[in-house]
Amino acid sequence: MKHSFSGIIVRYIRNNDAPETTDVLPEDELHVNLWEVARRRFIDLGVMISQPAEITTLQVDLPWEINHTKVFDLGSRLVGEKIIAAIFNDVVQYRGSNDQMFAQVTFPNAITPRSFVLARLSSQDFISEQVVLSDGSRTTRLKVRVPPLPNFSTSSSALYIRFRIIDVPEENYTSVFSQKDRNLLSSSLETRIVDFRINVRRGTPDDILTSQTNLRFPRWKKIHVFMTLDRTREMTFSNEKFVDCRSLEDEAVWNSYIALDTSVTGSEGSVSDYLGYQWTSKSEGNSPAKDLVALARFSKVTSSKAYVLRFILLALILGAGGNGVWNIAEEIVPKILPSTSKNWAILGILAVFFTAIIYVPPIVIGLAKGAATLSRKIWSSIQGWF
Image (cartoon, rainbow, N blue to C red; front, side, top):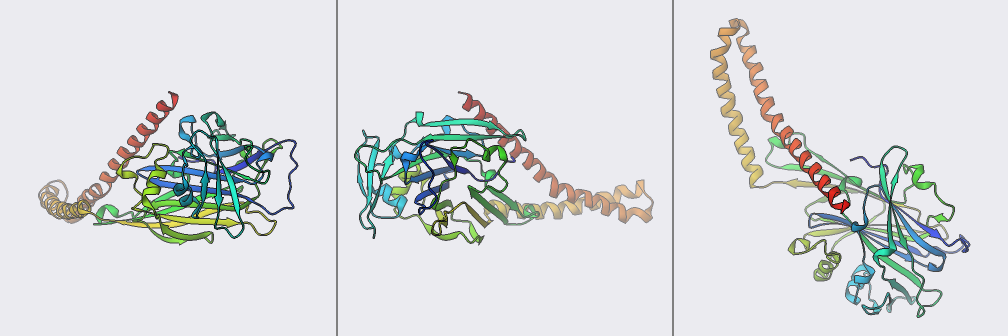
């Protein structure tokens, strides 16, 4: 599937009465977690808003279609210090309860004491709109209501909202290449290019960027992208924004976190077989972090008993089949063609035989995979109607 633009666009709809300030240090942060676990792909977006009184709505433009069943609030499910400490990789103090719409989170060990208010949103706070672009493609405009600060907070308190978007299409941010001769080998080398973009304006259609006057790109202090991928892949290249790769500690905490929306359950949702890759873009003085491109190349060598068995069987079939075709051709060709052309005719028959052996099975497999993918998309669309 071809998408109109890559990555996502995150902006604020500002309060009309609030003047925009550009002479102060950027304080807002954007945390994007892209998960590929349990054969599912989903994105967690966390936004730290330093001046929530000036913002009415968070707007996220996605280059694929979603409906209301694909978005879940996480703030209402982040209960307790362990899970929040894992997200922020720091010691925190948590004050809140399940029956409250807000919770207070403090970093007691920070050099400069800081805290924020964790907001809990309802399903009514999320509105998804389908947008048809001038080229005929469809995208989604997700609007998230930013609630006012509670009475117990101060005017300087930051507000943090976090939500999840499930069933992210892989082709939106990645391309996969395999060896052309993989069907003849006992192993397969797969190369994967990951190119995930945040607020990159180049290549984004004007239909997305042109909008109402009170819609603004936030002045980000930091933009983080944290990808959790299968550890069997080896990173062979990354761009300059790449920071670190690490395993996920406190596996029990992370296992419970990725299952917060109940879309990932059971032993398949364990993070023990995954690694986290981090990219970060930071502000410089009064200049905010405008965008972030998480670019990397991953390689994966796949080999198994099935691959080896297929290789042995293919060698036997090619050897035995080639000899059989040669013997049959030696008997048939002289009856049809002059003897001077016999060897060339036999070689031509062998070429056709080997070509069919090599190329016909991959074509059949490709058609079967395409039919299966189309069936899944049709079924997903039917579910979306209900």
